[in-house]
Image 1 (cartoon, rainbow, N blue to C red):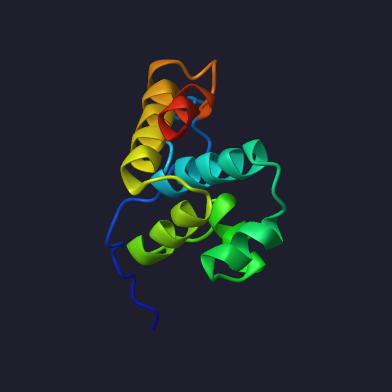
Image 2 (tube, helix red, strand yellow; image 1 turned 30 degrees about the horizontal axis):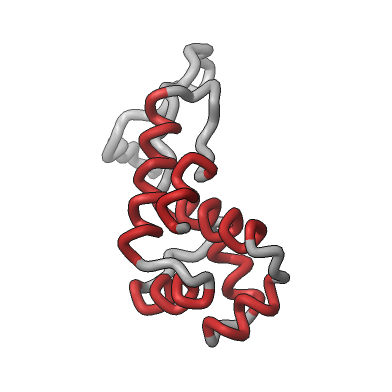
Length: 118
């Protein structure tokens, strides 16, 4: 006596060959890219920056890869370790997101926004 239960939502047609629209980059990915770029500009190892920020190298690595959604306190600690203000870091991330949105072919980079942190 199996009864048929109607689905709560329609099934997804996975055979549709239309390309999916480009997704807007996530904040944590752009933040991580900027943090890694700033660290590389300083010629620092991950462990050096992590030690000064008071976070583990694993946590900083996860931040840089966009895996973690760090708290404002963690962002401030890493920004301080990189001698960057939160305002300058936020502007760099915003510029990275703006660049990614305006031209997907160029890709998102923080290089143009690094001058803000200098």
